[in-house]
Image 1 (cartoon, rainbow, N blue to C red):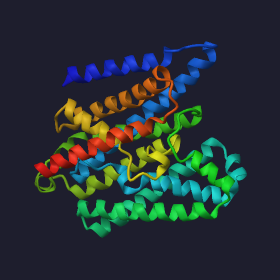
Image 2: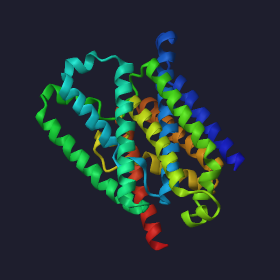
Image 3: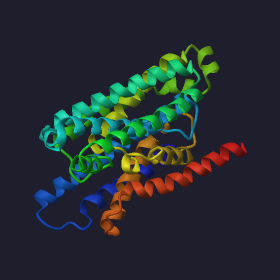
Image 4: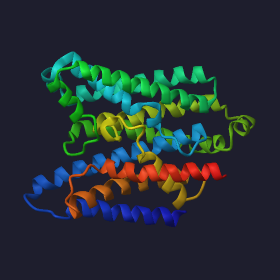
Length: 321
């Protein structure tokens, strides 16, 4: 497994160097910091969403689910719509980037935690019921957001639409540092849970017998998921087309490839594998679209196309099994 991880890390290094150097023109003092900020944002989002998806699939014991299924992308667009409706486009634009990031992160993490707590009480420990209820509530959140967007000024609606997709063209250095600190703390805590997650992956009955209460680990993992997904989404926007897709397939694609390349249940291997593959997918994909093909097509459109096929393959494999 170590050689495979080293190989993926090497591919990531090549992609990162190529992203920084291919097609390099203009003053280096401007171009290199600009590309470096985009590269850091891509890597940060990849790390956050990859680790969050690994945690979510482990606690739900389901390989085709992602945190976006629970409505995180919809929550972001709802918070954004409410802010723009309350402040107006001019008032919203007057907010400083750190203030806007803090409000988005607090709204996403807070509402996400409340959503999870309510769902877990309704599900009474049944993770399948939790996910199904989350899908329904996610649809309700999206419907409420659509209703609010129909009531706001067309100019304000354009602001909401422009911020409702993942964006890496303008990355504020202060926000990047804050998000990196939050995501770094989340990843460090997730790494400390890696052995306990291995036990939980054996099944709830086995975990209970081995002295690992599933409910406590579920709460801890959900807290980390809220922190990491909230930070990534507040920094770059939702990783779903238009913010209203059924779910983002990015995490699904990344973790599915990680399990294929490094077939193991050990989270000490699976977490770094997912992180490296996630960074390769985002940075390498952006490199191909921007530098090699000179296309303005959003990368998330391509990811969702591949993710849809991956989802169907995994679903058919589960049915066949």
